[in-house]
Length: 431
Ligand code: SDX
Image (cartoon, rainbow, N blue to C red):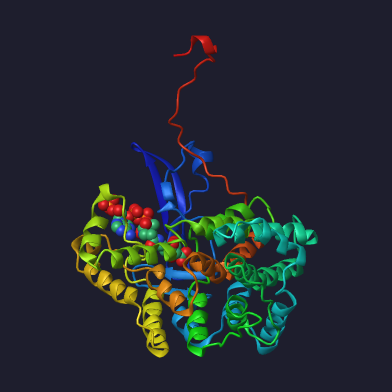
């Protein structure tokens, strides 16, 4: 007999709810009939106890520190795969054959340029514009430049084409926003360079300064993008699914996801971590006072890069990134004082009862900035690096959502706590 949950109100049973069991034994109480049968809704601010959908894309176990894309552990993908291959795995559900990978990869060349008219947008932004503002605007404006792609019921071919467009052009848009910010001419994508080297070349080369690719830096950035590629129903991915559930097009849905990612509690944390480490360094490098400050609720300060809604153990990505950061700095002969401060901060926090009791560990953002700094990525570009990495995950979830015939428009309820009914009062009678 399959498990079921029964809801009693006072001593009266009002509903029997089936229990849904996932591949790895994860369980959920299906309350789909609750409001229609009882008139009650559930209340769960932040959705800490609520599943929004069934998904076959990513599995993570926060207690065991497990993360798998389509069943494959990220540790294996980080070591053996490429970002394009991992993107194909996430979007299409299996590792591509050589022919499939060649076709997917060559389509990136076809779609690496942005419409020449879109370059005018960059002239309209101030050079100080945050690259996440530019990225979100540019991605949404792709719907104006590729209007034939905006259909309420896009075909498989349409979705395939937009997916490659977004994956390929996101690099170009981000690199162009950097060039705009430093007043240098844009460097166009090249067909002879793979995904990561192409991005780095667009970022750092110029007509009078060829960019020398450093293998270790290319490898470290490849690993970073793979590790950021998906993370099930996080804030930005849930945003992409919610916007897409209204049948908004994929460009608009991804643009909304970029905005959600920007927040310092989410993808903006990688920039906030470095700002925090810089402040600790400027104040003499004493990490203990910052650990104390993070424990003081009145301070409004949080240890950025620490804690996670799901992981109550080490974020498996943070472990790999920390090791890659050590490796890259050693191979490049870089001595970054912020890495030493980060390690001391981690050590101090993990010995402190406040963090231990709340199971607060370093997350994906804690060490990623060390790698980005070593490569030469400017601080304000850190969140867009997260967006480039997360692009395949956003696309995969949007595609899964739009192809699921049971998908309905996302529309949660609320508990109203405002004013009871009252009449309009003329302005001369108001107090
Ligand atoms: C990402 O969801 C995902 O999967 C996200 C992500 C992905 O790949 O998409 O993994 C990427 O966004 C990683 C998180 C990046 N953000 C940060 O590093 C910002 C700092 N971290 C926190 O703000 C916080 O930990 C969150 C936002 C990550 C999680 O917040 P929760 O789950 O809502 O936890 P909470 O705020 O309820 O905290 C529980 C307790 C509270 O204390 P008490 O009320 O129990 O006394 O832990 C404390 C919090 O005050 N706490 C922290 C803390 N994080 C939580 N205290 C100090 N420093 C912190 N960083």
